[in-house]
Amino acid sequence: GNSVTQMEGPVTLSEEAFLTINCTYTATGYPSLFWYVQYPGEGLQLLLKATKADDKGSNKGFEATYRKETTSFHLEKGSVQVSDSAVYFCALRGSNSGYALNFGKGTSLLVTP
Amino acid sequence: GAVVSQHPSWVICKSGTSVKIECRSLDFQATTMFWYRQFPKQSLMLMATSNEGSKATYEQGVEKDKFLINHASLTLSTLTVTSAHPEDSSFYICSARVGREPDTQYFGPGTRLTVL
Image 1: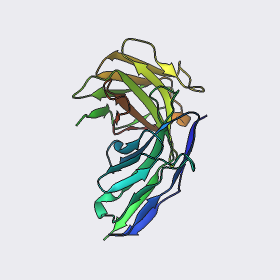
Image 2: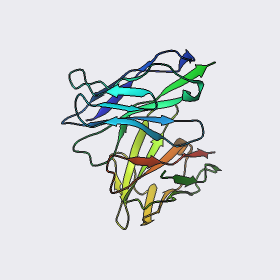
Image 3: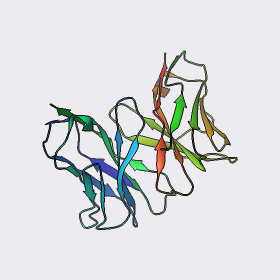
Image 4: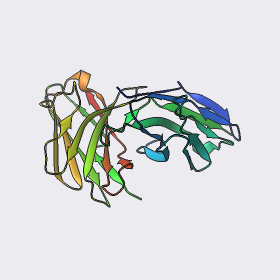
């Protein structure tokens, strides 16, 4: 079946540091890949997505590239801000699973001034 | 942007009672709504998918008689946890899909259920 594995948190970084959150997946066919972000007290929000191999999703300075050869979709940001503190979820939508999403466990990010 | 609300945001109940959680799409009509369950430090686990006017489709291992889902309109879905027990304590999250954006789900803020 489909599954997503992402790095354990929490991750603590200083402001302006480089961020990488690793995400790998297992799926049959050609899944779509997503990163969602959950700020404290709020619902999950779509951060970025990629629907086919080699696509790069980007938003708010975050990027992730769909790597089929390594089954990965790592999230990166060159310079994090305190306001980026949140929980980040990697997810996939299988090509044969309707519109339901499979999520990773989430990675908590804390950015300190 | 599209907003999904959940009510209540948290609830504490006694074992054996039933609890209803509402999920509303506030400014759009949702063709499909999803219910997820999240345990501490775990991923969101899909419980069921509901389409307006039809029976919900439950994931394997989810008891349909325990977790009753009603999707009476394009803006409202309800999850009723019947005869709740302490092991049902969890964080329940709904999401709504807009038909014209198949890859976009809008999530509610979640409901924390604690069963004593």
